[in-house]
Amino acid sequence: MKFTHKIFHIEGNDERSTLVKSMNDYLHSYSKVLDTPTIKISSHEDLENFVKNNPGFVPDKNGYSLHGEQGWRYGEIGIWASNWTAWHNFLKSDADYLILMEDDIVHSDGFMDILINYISQLPENWDSFHAFSPADQFGKHTSSHNFGADDVCLAYQDWSCLCYVITRTAAQKMIDNSYRFNLPLDWYMFRQQNLFNVYTVKPSSEFPCTLFPTESTFQATQKREILNGIL
Image 1 (tube, rainbow, N blue to C red):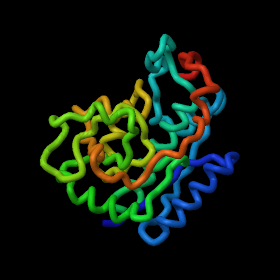
Image 2: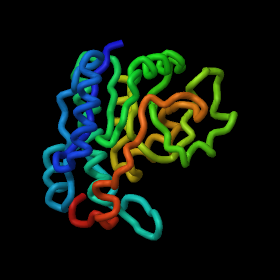
Image 3: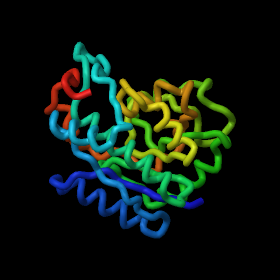
């Protein structure tokens, strides 16, 4: 198994910077950092520039509806742009698997041992494996998600891309299906399991990482809006 990885991070938060350093230091012996950027999109101009330079990146301007709001928060598009770019750069590398993480990740001492063990339990046609599921999603797990593995199952959660692993086949598949995407990245995977074979950790098994309790960098400060005049 040859791994490459990337933790998406924008400087400016000391707590998150410390978490990133800890994770990168730990992974140094197991995986090579993927040469791919964290893309910050916080305005009309940022998005316009990224789309102009990456013509294959085409969000649906109408986005999606949630809590009475329609459209996108720019931060959601930034997450998409960062992951989409990483998928492309992963395919240019010689790695077998890509680990993508957010910068509020806290890893266990045995993170890679656990991760490799869990990957070994997945069926051959897996696309993405999420190494974390939020506790508020555990109640959605039912026996129908199980397929005989000790620790892993079909994804049951509805949010969080704190840490996920994808195969080369999956990266291409995610790119191919992303034209005019109209869902946030986590929903894109979790709510389209007719397109992607998505797996996660059973609630009863050990999670190799968890979420650091900190505020979102954009969810509380940005308004969702339709991207008129851009796409």
